[in-house]
Structure formats: C-alpha cells, structure tokens
Image (cartoon, rainbow, N blue to C red; front, side, top):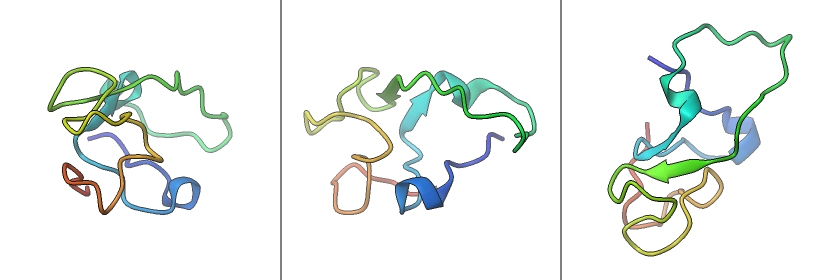
Amino acid sequence: MPEPLNLNIIGHAACRCLHSKETFIHAEPDPRIPSMSSGIHWCVHTHTCLGPDGQIAEPEACKPGRGCYDPL
C-alpha cells in the first residue's frame, strides 16, 4: 500500500479519495531522493480534477470540512 502524504507538508491526513499516478507506484520511499510528484491529482468520486462539490482535487484542498473528505 502506498505511503500517505507527508502530514508535515499539508498539515492534515490525506484524503483516501484523492489519487495521483504516484498512488500506483509500489516502492518504498527513499528520503534521499526528492519528490518527483507530477502535481496532477483526481478524485475517485468524479474521476476528474474536480471533486463532487466542483472544487479542485489537490492535497491542500482535500481536507477536513470538505463534504467529500475521507481521511486515510
């Protein structure tokens, strides 16, 4: 199972409905290698870059208080 996003970066638990291509890479994270995140995310509810509420699907926006947020 992929590692959850670093909470020190986004300040809250990652949403289990938020995916990116990195979600499907099954490798142990190596702290010596900088993150190469594409920055492209999608919501499993809509399969687009917008959540069911019409707001952007990204780690900083998918947080507690959003109706579709489901913490890891």
